[in-house]
Length: 107
Image (tube, rainbow, N blue to C red):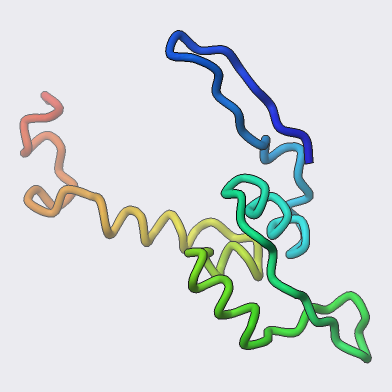
């Protein structure tokens, strides 16, 4: 996977473009995640009867837990669960999401 580097006022910034990865497959998502966060990929075990199917092993689940990988994203490629968890953790509870009542946004 190719690393992209851009120059910024505070110095160079390098990253791996999501568009350069095959995020349609578990293998592609693991490859992108490992490149982005510089971690070692987990060993993958494939089903003997369906050679393109990865088995959900304890080792894979432990790796995802330790590295903080969303199972929704890893296994299905869906980001809705990740977005929901982020929103629940970081939205401003004092105003129930009502920015007008918070004074942050005027009506």
